[in-house]
Every structure is written in structure tokens, then in C-alpha cells.
Length: 279
Image (cartoon, rainbow, N blue to C red; front, side):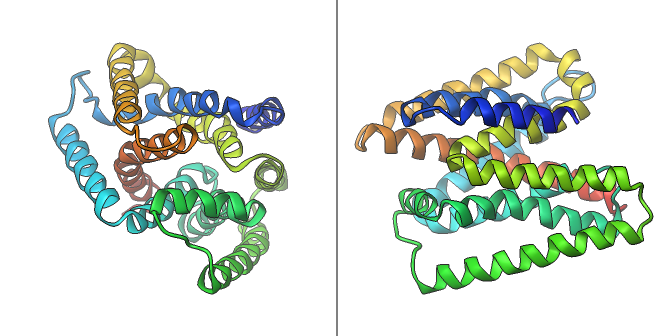
């Protein structure tokens, strides 16, 4: 319930922001998102895990190379992993097995598809900026229409899937209220603003509540790791001087976040799938 209220309040507060405030919106997303990912590097004794550090270093290096050599593939990988990560992390605790997979697909696809459906022109411009090539065309249109049809089918059948599991109707109504609110947020807000509202008020808060004891106990390490990401982001902004300010800001922020988000998504998704699917 807290996540639902916070997403709604953030969406209402960010609704009237002008494009000139997007830098603040990006900073809000970075400041909120990094602490829950920083805990990946902390051991049970409060030290920094060398294997995790090596994993992140290799992941960042490989993904950075992919962004330089094949940005379209890097963007595609980021979108797919984001869908899997957000969906599996945000699925209700009552779902498991096939219901967990079903709900994960609905939630994850919503976050990735909704901006493309409701704000296609803005998303295509962002993708062109990131990939260095236009994604528009017949293939894009067909893929988007197919994905939209599949998502609607999965969303409707999810209601029936919950019903046959005999879960309390109040809980089922809450799950679908969350999905409906996210649809409205992505419909009404600019894609970047809508995603930050979801990421800050929904995903990060939901994840942060799970790991709050770690965040509280090792707050110095978490703050240190978070500060490092800010320094890296600042460095990327500084060296990318050959583009217009707005494009440079958005592209640099997106790619910088992806360098940390993809290793984190792989890490967390593996942990969640192992726990929820008992593998």
C-alpha cells in the first residue's frame, strides 16, 4: 500500500515539471536507486565482496564495450533484462510457480511497453539517440502491436489465474489496482518522469524494504558505494562534450545507469528466481 500511495503522490508532483527539470528527475532516480543495488557488494560481515566486485567490474566493462561497438544490441539487452528484473522483483509475495512467472511477465512488460505505446515518438527519439540508428519502421510497428496484444491477453488471464488459486479477493484487487495505477502514470506523464515515479516510489522502495536491515547496518558502505556512482556519472557527463546539452545529459545518464543496472538486474533476478521457483 505504501508503494502504491508513493507512486501516486510522486506522479502527481512530477506531472507539472517542465523539460528543464529533467536533470533533477534523473538525479532523484539515481539517488534513490543506487543504495539498494550497492548492497550487492556487501558481505554478511560488512566487508566488500571481492567476487561481487570482480563480477561488477567485468559486467561494466563488457556492457560498456557493447555500448561502444553495438549500441542497438546493448539497448535491447538492457530492455529485456529490465523487464525480467522489474517483473520478478515486484511480483506479489502470494504468487509462486507459474503464477509468479505470469505476474512477472505482466508487471515487467508494462514498465517497458507502456512508454512505447503511449509516447511512441518520444521513445523512438530516445532509442535513436541511444542506439545511433532509427528503430522506426514496419518491423517496429508490428513488434509493438504484437507485444501490446500479448500483454493485454496476459493481463486478463492473470486475473483468472489469481482466481483459481483461491487467493483472497482483497489481495487480488490490490494487485490489479497497482497495475492500473502504473498504466495511468505511464499514460499521463512523460516517459522519463513516469519511470522515475515508478522506480523511486515503487521498485526501489519495494526492494529497499526487503533489505532495510542491511541498508541500516552498513549505511556507511552503502553511502560510499552510492557516492562512487555519482562520481562516475559526473565523469561521463564531463567527457561527453560533443553533443547538445540535453541529449548528452539523457544519453550519458541512461548509459551510466545501465552499466550498474544490468549487473544488478542479473544478480537480483537470479536470487529471486532461485527463491521463488525453488531452483
